[in-house]
Image 1 (cartoon, rainbow, N blue to C red):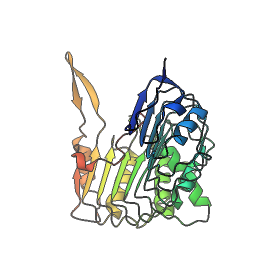
Image 2 (cartoon, one colour):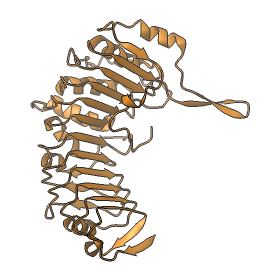
Image 3 (tube, rainbow, N blue to C red):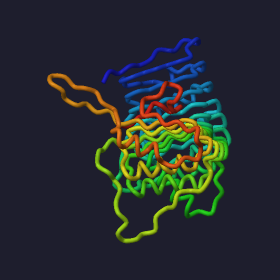
Image 4 (cartoon, rainbow, N blue to C red):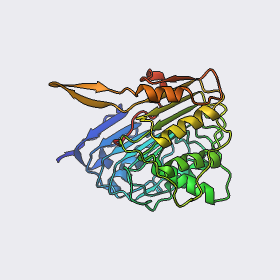
Length: 342
């Protein structure tokens, strides 16, 4: 890895983007005019990051990706009074994220192994866009307090949760006697690593315990595995009933990697039955490559019998249109950049 020692910076420098370097003497290199700092695969210590942030009082956008030497990101003593956007992606050795006060933080995106953090409490009054995603499917729930504050974020308008974070929020709100404050949420994006019975139950539980009466757009990224994850309930364990009401303002829903499996069909039937204002429902099949001669033919079509079955499902609104093709750019989620593979 190349080591770079920055000279004293220009007082006109506003944006800094560094990739694949070993940074030294960053406290001398940073200038007070810097507002945007993006570090990708940078060899940076905890202390060096703190010095950098302390030297940049105007910092409004901090993006840390694959900085795998970081262990404890702690801005407790340096402060981030102007930080508006903070992204942390796969800083795999980081076990703690401490940002007790972030009065202007509007967007926080986190992808990686869940950890201990107080950032959501510190930005409770300002946070509008939140992305929480673990590094991928887990064999068990990691120890973390990160998702627990989600229902209390009253200013959230856009929320993206992976199925692990969704399970945390759903189980926590179901057990804890607390009132959810997600009344202003307009867009919900769910990244589902699995679609077993428990995953569908988590979706239902979230919508019941965290009502989102203003929700207008729902995106569900389904897993790409071809096996149907539905399991028969032979033990007669009580299942989560779908919520009644709460989606009266939903206008657009999009399910990606839709294959028509049992639980996926149950989710579609629920959305059609409960969303009286739903204008468009997009069901996008997973993209597959099929060999044909010496070349591959790209196919993302659902079988006709499945389309026919869906078209006969009960609808709360006769005006709901169902599309089986890729929509235009206007129907993509705000958090269209997903940091994990499905």
